[in-house]
Length: 166
Image 1 (tube, helix red, strand yellow):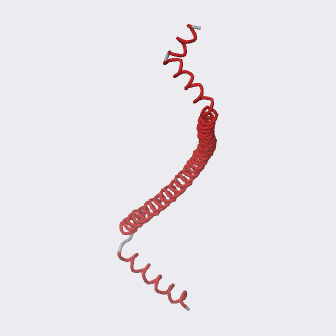
Image 2 (spheres, one colour):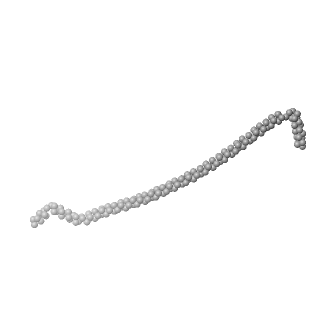
Image 3 (cartoon, one colour):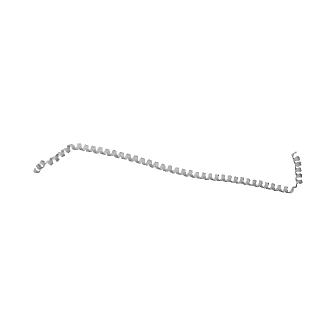
């Protein structure tokens, strides 16, 4: 029993016994407080996880929306480029046709001017030919006519005018 007596006399033994008694009475209450704190922490962690999931879902929705908008913008840009190419091709074709028409009109106008100049040149040559022929005839007539013959021709022409006028 000595060992028992020495154990009962040891202060560590009584501190341990007091601690066990304290835990026996205060343990369930402390356990409730600790469990409650852990439950609140678990609830907070779950709320944080739910918020993080919600933010992740929103971010994925925004990403999907922006990707769709990007695809739409690329498709629209492609359509604009195709439309611009078609318009440019049509305008180039129209410009070529207009150029052909303008060249044809200018060619026709030039041909008309050439024809007019040709006609004017022919008329001028004819006038000159008539003038030269008239001058040559005048010289021939003047050379072959003497004064008696000229007076006779003038008298005959005067008589002939009187008959032709009436």
